[in-house]
Amino acid sequence: MALSGLDIFKKLPKTNCKKCNFPTCLAFAMQVAAGKTDISSCPDVSSDVVAQITEATAPPIRPITIGTGDSALKIGEETVMFRHDKRFEHQPGIGLLVTDEMSEETLNNHIKQFNATGFERVGVMMRAEVMAIKSVTGNAERFKAVVKKVMDETQSLLILMSDSADILKAGLDICGKQKPLICGVTADNLDSIAQLAKEYNCPVTVKADELDQIADLTNKLNAAGVKDIVLYPTTTSMKDRFEQETMIRRLPLKKIYRSLGFPTIIFPGDFTADKDEEILIASTFVARYSGIIILSTLEPHYTYPLFCLRMNIYTDPQRPMTMEEKVYEFNNPGKDAPILVTTNFSLTYFLVSGEIESSRKPVWLAIQNTEGLSVLTAWSAGKFNAESIAKFIKNSGIAEKVSHKNIIIPGYVAELSGDLEEELGAGWKVTVGPREAPSLPGFLKQWQVN
Ligand code: SF4
Image 1 (cartoon, rainbow, N blue to C red):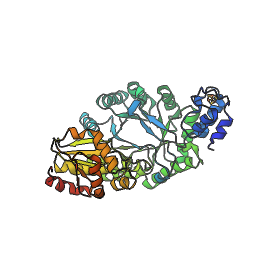
Image 2: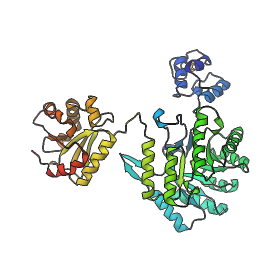
Image 3: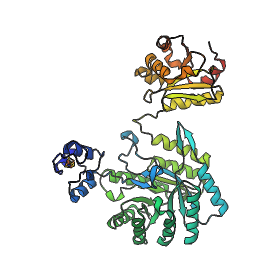
């Protein structure tokens, strides 16, 4: 059962000694209850109390990290069934499967595909993060060589796949320091792979068809001291897997069954050999609720919709996506290029910049910080008005880069034009641009300095 700040406070020394960097024990307890700091920051509580509070305040789905440093992939830590209840914490990692049975040519093509994958959308680079390397030959030397090749030729996070501890060890000897995900533990190899996981401090997957078998394996791993686990239900029935993913999220959240409180991995290629179907299956499990999705292809026409879907579902609905406030340059603008101003809602920027690019007209695009609100919303909230636009334009330094004093505002806020001319002063002229972005290319073709 979750502990309140007061429950935690009762277990603290109550000396207000500040060694935890909080002014009082109560302030510290409140932060621990909110998940913003760790109980172990108080050096004066007993290890029993640390264990008790850590258990009670742990997120229902354990956070798991694959890799190290800034590029590490964090999954799990989810606290809701539905995004609108709060938000989903960590988007699923997307990756590519290779095997040690592949020819050099096929392997090279897959590596090339992985390295080439990437789309920029609303200022964010969408790309795959992981490569899963599967031992099919059963030859440790071959597995090792493929792991080395992937390591040398990509920046990918790694998943090592074999049921043999010896083969996994061969791979870990090469890449163990990078904290790959070891896949995977079964009822037959649990002890030997648990040993490897502890030796290399790596997370592991547990593999089984049924949830009760998976729970049994996670309990045994926990008892063996392995806590970082990813669940791999191996059913190839879409219906069963869909239901399993729902149970794996629901049961720990409702605190009915903590043994399933871990993120999952899925290989949509296990369900079908058809690539179109594979991507549809992957889309289903982006929405519900896989932590890592490993594909047999990363060809852009397959992955683009998947990346967009992932971005849309895993964007925090309480925090609009924003662009940095500044003047952006398009098509190499010179002194006589027009200045357009709009808000820093990413979608607004994305739509406007796309139309400017397609017009091929040089433009200075001044993006004002409106806390991520779109034009009309920002205007009605008082965050995009004559005063704020004038202040931004004056501070932006754009006046020194152009030979004119014309500025174009979105058609939806036409009524700002008089006030904005006054606020800008010194001969500035305001032109009302189109309401909708698709009209921009035609507008820019006709625009002239006046
Ligand atoms: Fe209280 Fe511990 Fe913080 Fe000291 S270090 S103020 S005892 S919570």
